[in-house]
Image (cartoon, rainbow, N blue to C red; front, side, top):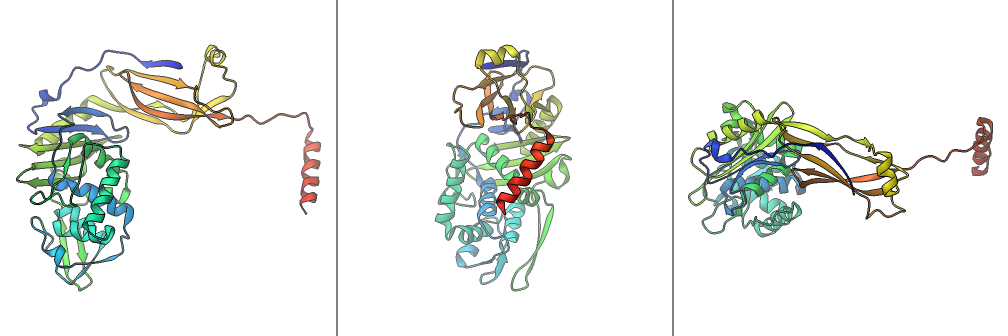
Length: 366
């Protein structure tokens, strides 16, 4: 193992309770790294209501045809709760249903999307659960695409919902939809709808809010997910079973923006190793990484970042030499593949020899 300490200091001692968060559970997460900056019972399984629709939208965007005309049948229009009041027998484009889903939280829209993309509700719910497993989430289980909990229900955690939002915000179309103030849609039968976003922070109550989703049922109470960006730092807040969720989100965002900066802790390109490190581990090739790594670090200097280069598992005939671990406060935050930079073999041939060699090779090819 090759280790190098980049930043050293004591660990932060701030606690989320000092912010006076009213929500039963809450998480503040950074978008790029997924680092949780603050949490309050972030792993408690709870009803989540309509923030379910973040996952519904993501699964539809990844698997559906956005220009498809979707049939509005009886099963769609009979959905209870929040509704777009779609007309039975009409057709609506999938992209418009997604706007209605995220802006107005239409449960009829959720069912129409599920039937169009998954074949039926059961098939789509299976796709939802498969998708969260792909994210590595084990504390979330979905039974419907809307978040209704009268006859079936969806369970998740504040931390899992932050990860789901993180994945969704990596999709540029979702980002556009969830950050839209209003949307006009026209159905196949010529009916026109105008939907305005219910999320107050996104529509102007918080300057840095860029996307989000509201939720409410009697069992879940108020649930809320918001993304906000200030300069190059993008944060996610999730609150479950909230009393004053709008202010909870403002307070958590303000804490994050005031106390953290996004910093590059690993730069794409050649790794600089000492002669002693190369000799100790028998490294002869130059090593490099193919991507930058950014982490949100506390501006008070209290975060520790270290790197560990593991070459033990590297096959000799493979360009990948091993893995570089990025440790934050003693815990692995990311693992980055490390590659060998193969050097060109030098010869003593003159430029004329090389020129003639190319000429003869070209003639042989003809």
